[in-house]
Length: 111
Length: 112
Image (cartoon, rainbow over all chains, first blue to last red; front, side):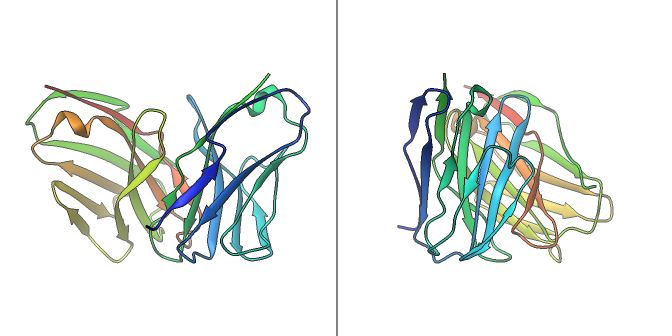
């Protein structure tokens, strides 16, 4: 089944404790992206990757890191999480010109 | 700068009605436009993708149209059902499908 998977689905952590949210797709898509969704602000892009070893900042990259060492994986790293990074995070993948597929989301709470 | 607006922000209709959701964008130079559905606390499901050269796309009871010259897209839902209740988002592709500009969504409630 074609899908985008994210782990964990839910995470509660404390300020400053490094964490990684994994994202994996099995569709051989070259493009992957991370979004965050907050009430009243809609979906905002954090980082995206056009292919292996090619990443770029989206609209709200501060406080986040990404890497794309393999085509299927695109982890999101929070080196020192803060409460303002409490949000619902989505990973997405696509091939050029075609629809984007989204993961189920990761709900992160930073205390 | 491209901006995407969805009106209304919320809509409540009785079951069985045909309805139209609107999406407008400020720059007609788009690559494509997608409609998504999001259920509460869940991920996004792509409903329809319209390429810039197309006028409409259909899937089951859903029909999406695109008028680039007027900067508008509509999502038509025929014979609405309670299971259609969700938030519907439109997103415009910039120079490729890679980067999307999002509308804020229309929250749709279908009353049994």
